[in-house]
Image (tube, rainbow, N blue to C red; front, side):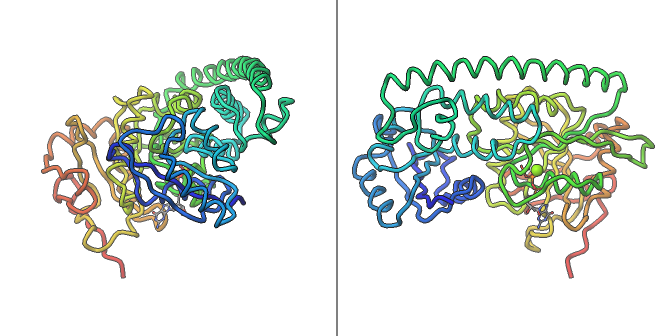
Length: 404
Ligand SMILES: Nc1nc2c(ncn2[C@@H]2O[C@H](COP(=O)(O)OP(=O)(O)OP(=O)(O)O)[C@@H](O)[C@H]2O)c(=O)[nH]1
Ligand SMILES: [Mg+2]
């Protein structure tokens, strides 16, 4: 475990800036680091050389020495030059958010395809930079490590080797993709109704997946616990047929675009689904931002038009005042689309019957009709977890018992 200093830079007062650095801390821990101090900086624009100003850089250096830290982690993306200059200035490994996400992905990938996808994303990231933190990857490629910093000639050589490796990995991925397409076509012939779980990382997708199909998918209080897609059949009594349910990789703010591209095959699962269960952590203070981020990624991967059900999970963690009066209602998304919303606790099972019923209605094609008939006032996303109208759904009269 490397002792790490966390740095967040608020550039131009961005709304997405997380002053708590809590998510960065979670990412760091998931990547195997131990955060020992947090630093916040504000700038109109990033410094081209060091990202932060030189005064701030010295402050960080003092913290590194004071805490005997081995790494400095930035919540924002660094350019290759900034990263290299910072490593020289601070004398320790410097990583940004993208790098942490890639490390977590690398540690979690299980399937052949998942591993290839992560390797490709890591190589693409590395192709523009050489960094201390991944010196093991450089050594694997025959590089000289980073003591004293690699020379320019070495960097050129490494770049050529990375380029070749990227080509090989891409070819292998193509092959896996062809196999996957064959499997998909056979599924299409079966005309299985496909449901995909999507949502922000740590929202509880795998826990919900397990609760619905009674399987044992890996669920943990870590970011990106799930990387590879798992699919199971699951029987709906109401409509007397099985549907397939897929658990997928979680989304996160500023998910690097290259990464999304690399995970295209995995995310394709979501884009081709007949129904998306968008799982949100209803107890998260960042609920609105997380939902908006997921909608953005969904649009990005071509899944914007797939019918959605919002699943407000972790109901058990909500305060009494935040609890809805009915288990099922509807919510208007940005852009005016009205979607059903179900409150559940994947952990204790509350709301799962209602969720199964909503899925059944989607399979039977009666969900849209239900939405048109019952109009309600729509709360803004900020109020989404507390301001819940009732009596909007056919069985909206079902109320949750308050917890004992
Ligand atoms: N209190 C409470 N905790 C929950 C609930 N559902 C999931 N959790 C917890 O939330 C954490 C994350 O759950 P996962 O199911 O791994 O979440 P995920 O969305 O699959 O996360 P990634 O695969 O990392 O994207 C775990 O510690 C779960 O035990 C719930 O309904 N209530
Ligand atoms: Mg998961």
